[in-house]
Image 1 (cartoon, rainbow, N blue to C red):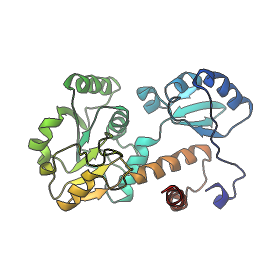
Image 2 (image 1 turned 120 degrees about the vertical axis):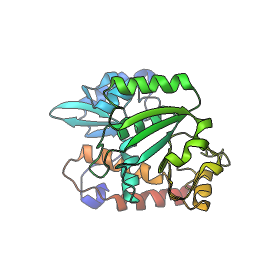
Image 3 (image 1 turned 180 degrees about the horizontal axis):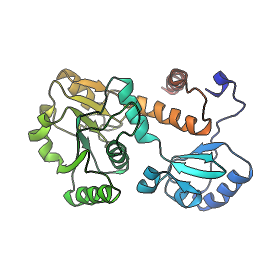
Amino acid sequence: MLEKLGINAVYLPLPCHPDQIAQGMQGFRALGFVGANVTIPFKEPMVKLVDELTPIARFMGSVNTLFWRDGKLWGTTTDPYGALKNLAEHGIDTRDRKIALLGNGGAARALAFALLSAPALPECGPPRSVTLFGRNPEKLQELAQQLRAAGLGNSPSLDVDVFENFTVRSKEFDLLINGTSVGMAPGVDEIPVSPDSLHPGLAVYDIVYNPEETRLLREAKLCGCKIIPGIGMLIHQGALSFSHWFPGQEVQVDVMREALERFRARIS
């Protein structure tokens, strides 16, 4: 992307010992880096090392992207918005949808925040409802309380339920999002919901991208569902990071997709 746009910059991995991340950030500031992506185990510690946080980063207590605005170092997370961009790319508008979101871990929390912050993106209107499904009722209620405390969950409406009840409720929904890691390699034969709960008219999106077509997506395709693989989320979250670093520059998603495909071909 940088070469394609003629931007004089490089994107480099910079390893840092977890105990030295504060010193590393001093160097980041002193050397005038344009921005950065942040990965585990630095996402949570980074919250205390930036000047400002976007609302979703503040809610999540984690950061995956650093960028500068008006002389201040900001932290945000682009993953959930990458997922929404991915849905829009496949013709899925969240507007007026009844959405079942599986999971209450970090990815699902971020997706819930983005979906309930309607409209999270110009391409994605407010859903009619979001129902979180998880294993632990207490943790689900805790997440729902945190979302409501952040001013979310009234419009669109927010509900919670346990995984076991998805099968009997599945026909209430027209979009299912797997926000768990179930089905990720090496557990490729695992599936987060019963195949019997899938039905035509249900769009199924899986944020897992390794393998690209999970068992959930294979079963959904057999049932006549529209399926959306999660590899696009990886591309679009990177594109959103890029737009923070170089505001006003055209983000060429196809160039990023081609680069990712070439990389995956080399390591496969």
